[in-house]
Image 1 (cartoon, rainbow, N blue to C red):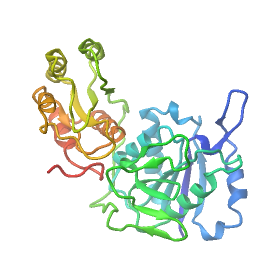
Image 2 (image 1 turned 180 degrees about the vertical axis):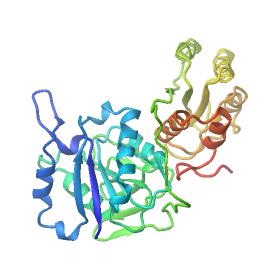
Image 3 (image 1 turned 90 degrees about the vertical axis):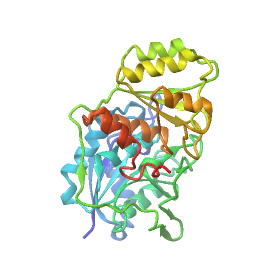
Image 4 (image 1 turned 135 degrees about the vertical axis):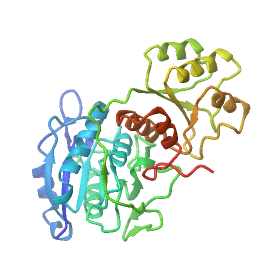
Amino acid sequence: MKKTLILYTGGTLGMRRSESGYVPDADLEGALGRLLQDVIGQLPQYDFQALDPLLDSANMRPKDWYHIASLIRDNYSQYSGFLVLHGTDTMAYTASALSFALQGIEKPVVVTGSQIPLREMRSDAYNNLIAALLLSGSDDIREVCLYFNGKLLRGNRAVKVNSGSLDAFSSPNYPCLGEVGIQVNIDHNALLVPTGEPQFQIPADANGGVILLKLFPGISPSLIEKILESRPKGLIIETYGTGNAPTDDSAFTEQLEKASKLGTICVAVSQCLEHQVDLGKYAAGSALLDAGVIGGLDMTSEACFVKLNHLLAMGYSDMEIKTLLQRPLCGECNHPN
């Protein structure tokens, strides 16, 4: 008998109205039971657990990612699948983090939420819940996924692209794993195939010390210098195009070179949603390479941030981290050419 553990972390799906706007509401289990009573025989059985405290996803921190992961780890043998109900704002970060914390799993972990609360008219929560719960009972899915509005995406490939549409998430650089319409269609060729035993990687200190910086025209090297004064362990740089930066000012690359020499691991991702970083394509990117910056391949900013944070928090050496950043660990990037 299929049985899913539903972990309710907070987010729009279970929110209620208050004088200050929507807030997380702990009374979701009863509402869920009433909504599903007519179709429960067609879905996996489930247990429900609400986190305490419930969080708007804007308040999620790395320690919360790994708390969710630890609950899945501790209950892994008791359930055939897991469903994480989560707010949409940082859902892509959490789904990415779970993929690195739960490498090699052989059961589905499906993260979902909604744009409109379950208690409101025209809510998308019901359809997302039904489909995600159904998918959590799949024998074919053996990875962390994000389900939203008919699309099943790899968790560490997903990005939120629209805050005003029910079709809120996309997977720019990897195919959808499946689609749920009149039929449930799974693309088996796109699914991750685990090898070996599950590797539960949950660090004691979740904060790896990573900063995410978006480049903009006219950015001052003094801003970079100020940011680097805090001596971050990692720096994700959202560059232009294939990995370009304003390198005509040598002070910019000098700051990055100094940071690299002092032990900050610097990684370049692209502000473009599609394609990948290639630091050697243009001189403006090659200068970053010379300064010690690593290319983040076709990773999303969210996945790259989480991956670097994870590797640092797990205590890998700088050399190991630089190697692993250029290697897919759980489908988050393509192999470099």
